[in-house]
Structures are given as structure tokens and as C-alpha cells.
Image 1 (cartoon, rainbow, N blue to C red):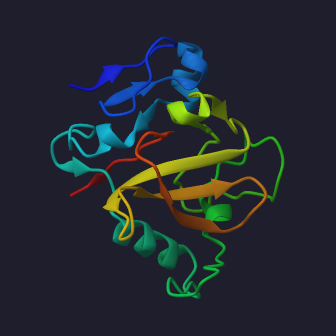
Image 2 (tube, rainbow, N blue to C red):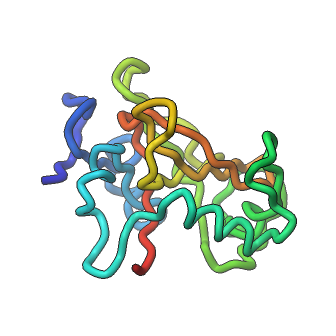
Image 3 (cartoon, rainbow, N blue to C red):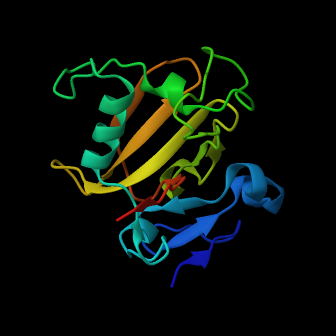
Length: 169
């Protein structure tokens, strides 16, 4: 089962979710933050849906920016600008939400070694993928930063709390 974390329990190895700052008032606008252990249960999405893979995120970025080269070490693109809502972002580049993805800056929760602290609400959005990193036990994630047009793919320790977006199989 995926259980709701609270201030008294860290979620280092069990599937958990929580609201930013453990405050349910953030549910409607930003949704929940899930650790990577919840992602790998394959229980987050309804039947016929799943957490995106790395390939799914790359297909989306390439669709939004045909010039995107995923093999480039920098991976610059203009996809994030087209994925972010025009409201809720505290500062940064102009967003258009041209794609209808409607990313909101829900921030993230750090792992217990960092104190389980919440960061970057209104500044950044992070979405899990179900793909494991080739070099560690990390899962890959999609990162949308308020100060960047680029959608960034990077590894995250599964102890982090990130947002999840489900896609149809």
C-alpha cells in the first residue's frame, strides 16, 4: 500500500505520498508528492494508465521542440515554456502552456538525509519517470524550472518526493 507520510515519519524505503508541507490545502492546486518507492509499485495510476518512462518524456519534449537532441550533453530545448501554466510561477521565463500539459510549480520534498524538507514550490516542478538510472538506484525525472525554457531530464534518489503525471497505455 501507498501510505500518507506525516511530519513524524520519513519515507526512505516504503511507498509514501504527502502534500507539500504536509498541508492538504495544496492538494487542489499542486497535487501530491510521491517518493520513488511509490512509483515502482505500479499502483499510482488507474487501470489503463501508467507513470511515463524516460522515452515517453523524450517523445513529448521532441514533439514540443523538434530541434531537441536528447544525446546532447546540455539538452537545451524550448519544451518547458510550452508545458508550464501561465499562472502560479513566482518568477522566470514567460510560459505559454501551448501543449496543454499545465505544469504547476509544486516543488519537491527532500529525503531524510536532507531533513525531509520541502523546496521550490512556486519555482519548480518535478515529475517522476518509471525508468531507473543506468548508474545508480535513482529514478529519472522531468524537471521544469521557472527560470528556464528547457525541460530537463535528470536522476533523483527514490527517497525524494516528486509529482506524478500518468499517461494512457
